[in-house]
Length: 161
Length: 131
Image (tube, rainbow over all chains, first blue to last red; front, side, top):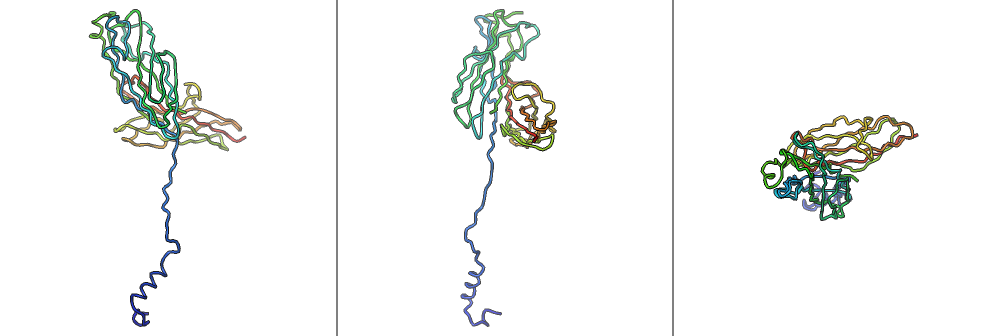
């Protein structure tokens, strides 16, 4: 059937056809689904540097001249995780140094961490659910002094719930 | 040679280690199985702008002792820059009615040596076999 042959104005027919094909529901929901799981990203944004106590020679540490604190960034989703620091150790030392120093760390953060120097393992849970930034210092003490060479003090930071 | 005094700063080589980073989720998960195996998926995250190799390994819930019955088919994956990847973890040898708790930890493989902070993230997993 042609439009003209039905005796109806073309515009009126087009309007009728358009209404006939209009969907029953004018709104359409476009879904975006997703799941947030608890995760943690740890980043050492600034590695630590050890300096030497030049007046006594019995301490190397990040708070000595030339030293620098390490900075650990924590980004968390779905709840503040707990950060555990292992008992620190001297992981690198020159062969000429055979003594056993006292190694300790201390750390602070805007999220509530405030630990004085300790040689034991320790942990804290940030008051900021989305993450935190921990500033960490390390030192090694030995009344007998240190041999010349390369040293590294180390702790393992574990993020978990 | 022992060092001391002013000269100490001149002869001691100091370490500026490379930074470390890693991401993992979920941090906790549990599941039930009717068989002696239970699988979990973890998402490993590479925060670096470069391709990096990571290491996944299982340890006891409250110690660093390895858990050989937990298998990780791809335990040393390489991830592209700023990417993430689903990793399969399979707990095996579950006895009827047994509940097995363990952790799976992830860390970056650092061939150049480790930083002052050795960063890792651990997920606590619980597998239970029906009795």
